[in-house]
Amino acid sequence: MASDLRRRTGHGSAVHAAEFIVSSARLGELHECSALLRRTRMRAAEIVDEARTLLAEAEQHGHADRVRALREQLDQARRSYSKVLDAYVTICGKITEERQAIIRAQVELDRRSGLSGVA
Image (cartoon, rainbow, N blue to C red):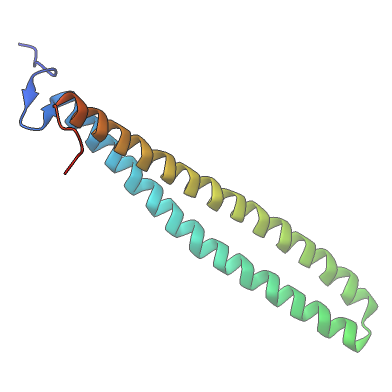
């Protein structure tokens, strides 16, 4: 016996309800990723600052070999920070897209239900 996924429920079809659950779960996962990347981004920024401070100290003390090594480490820290920042911006964009998709789906459902959106 097959279930009728197109049957109407109190707030729309069962398919719409399932799609909303999936979209909400996906949005939750994106928020979790965003939080992790935000913490990673903050730590990466701290590492860049620490590398910059160590380089400045080495330059001040005239340690030429150490300056070269720290300059490379600072460049690597900046590249890593840039990658984390790019990932964070991408996730934020995905969150915005997912929110907009949920809102569009809700507006479409409301339109089909005969709601005008005028209060």
